[in-house]
Structures are given as structure tokens and as C-alpha cells.
Figure 1 (cartoon, helix red, strand yellow):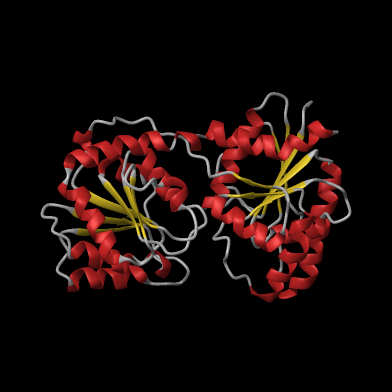
Figure 2 (cartoon, rainbow, N blue to C red):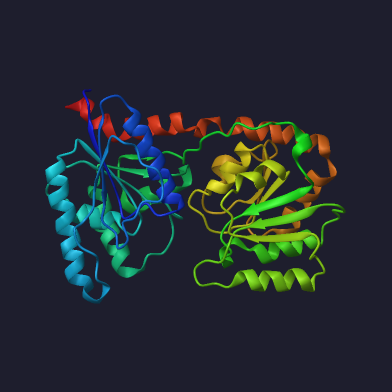
Amino acid sequence: MGKPRICCIIPSLNAGGMERVMSELLEYFAGIRNTDMHLVMYGKYPSIFYPMPKNLTIHKPGFNFNDTKRLWYTIKTISFIRKTIKTINPDTILSFGELWNSLVLISLAGTGYPVYISDRCQPNRPFGFMHGFLRKVFYPQAKGIISQTTQAKEIYFRKFKHPNISVIGNPIRLPGFDQNDSHRDQSILTVGRLIHSKHHDRLITMFGNLDTPGWKLKIVGGNALRQDNFSKLTQLVTRMGLDDRVLLTGEVKNVAEYYQTCRIFAFTSSSEGFPNVVLEALAYGMPVVAYDCTTGPSEMVIDGYNGYLVPLHDEETFSKRLQTLVDNPELLIQMSENASRSVEQFDMANVGEKFHYFITSHLDQK
């Protein structure tokens, strides 16, 4: 294969999980010698939060999307995507965004360009009639689909009957840090937006009922989706008399300092695509106790090795697993060492190469 011209396409590169993964892939692809890299952004707010490689050509529409004239500006966006891709003339296209991939496929219908798509959400998420219909019609026309987990692949195959679906997890840059246990305090950590599906209230209640003298629970994350859960959780902490043992940090920029200094990671979410926080916690040597929700944790947590998988909403078992780790320092240290080793497959070099191989493999067939 020669020097492929790769085009990545995404609504924006604002701060977010999907956007972070795309930015990591852009850097990886651009680092491949003599690759001609292009990025097309077409969303309402096509801004860039993450650093971009210098040898990347960025394309944005010359207009601002006007919601009061949604149909007209949707047509303009489709026209922009189609004309821009024809101008770039890429060898392969990678598109991210479960609410946007259909728009990209519509825009490029009949052009013959190979489009690889990836949703970055819970695979069985309901999308409503219109989005569901568009996905059913256009997803089978993609050159390939990238799912984040094996379970997601099975769900997508049942939905779209697509013959070319590859499982590729999210990348992580493995942290270089001191594995010495002495720098950690007696804390249980969770990281995530304060939304209902994360069930922080139940985690606080479970923690309050544990026999954990000297231990603290730290909840890192801010309000989201117009849900004022920070104040509700603060009131719950006070009612339970846990003000000196439960810390609600709000939004923080440097989450790494919490990964580095806490001992156990608790994950009570009931709905995920591929939870990066679980992967990050493991990379920092934290055993993870997680609900086995759809989907994600089971791809990273090996029950009894680097943490525990708990049936969804089984609070009794979840509490027992936390108590086991608190009561057994030697087990905690062993699982911590296992946790760090278990994420090597998600190193950026490995994941980036899997993406690159999948979206360029058709070029070898020419």
C-alpha cells in the first residue's frame, strides 16, 4: 500500500470522550510517514479543544448553522460535506458520532468513497423513529463499522447485518508514575458526570453502610444534562452524617492526581458505551469494582484479577466487593499490580494501528 490520504470527519473537537479519541487518532495517523491527513468538521460549533498535529489540513464550513432554519442549513451542511470530500478525494474516511454518521453517509451517497463509521455510545440506546430509520437505511452502506466492545458488535450485527464490523477499544496513553503504594491514601474514587445513570446517590449510601473507618469516598465530576445533582448529593451526604468522609469535587482539570492518590475505583453506572474512566483507573493501578452494564466494563475488568464485575444494581454484592478490598491490603496491592498490566492492549500504539489497518485494508485489495 502507498501513502493513503486519510480524512477524519466529526462535528467538532470540543472537550469530550468521543472528541478525545478522535484527536488521539489524528495525532497517530499524522505521525505515520508521509500520510496526507485531513479533518472535516461540520457541526453547529466546530471548535477545537485538543492540540492538533501540524501536518493536518482542517476544513470547516463557511457559515454558522442557524437552528431557526434547520432544514435549509442541514441541506447546506450536506452540500458542504459532499463538496469538501470531493475536493480532498480521500482514499478512506473515518466518521465519528452516533447522531451524525447517518448525515455523513447521506452526504456521500453515490460518490463511491469508502466511509468507516463508529458510534461512541451505548449500542442499544434508543434514537427515536427518525434517527432509527436513517441508521437502518444508511449504516449498511458504510464500508465498515467500528464498535468499541464485543457486545456492541453483536448488537450492531443484529441491527444492521453488516458483514464488516471490527471491535476496537478506546486508546489510552499509559501514564508514567510511581507504583509505590505509599503515595496513596485510604480513598475510594469515582469519576463521571453527576447524572442519574451514574447512580452516585446509591454509591454514597453503600459507602455509608460499609465498615471503613479512616476511609473516604471521592466523587469527581460536575453537573450535566441540566441535572442539578451536585446539590442533591451534597444534601444526601449531610443527611447521612458523611460530610467529613465524602468529598464532592465538582469539575476538575487534573483528574490524574486523584487516580494517583486513591486506592479503589467504584463504577456504578448503568449505561455506557466504553467508559474511559474505568480504563484510566486501571492504568493508574486502581482495582475497579463495576456494575456489569451494557456495555464496556466487561471488556476491561477481569473479575477477581484486576477488580470485580457485579450484576447490575446488585448493591449487596457491590458493597461486599468494596469491603473485601478494604479489608485485605495484600489482595488490594496484588490487584493494583494486575490492573496496570491489564490495560497494555489499549496503548495508543496498539489501538491506533488497529484503526489504521481497518480503515485502509481495502486499499490492499485494489
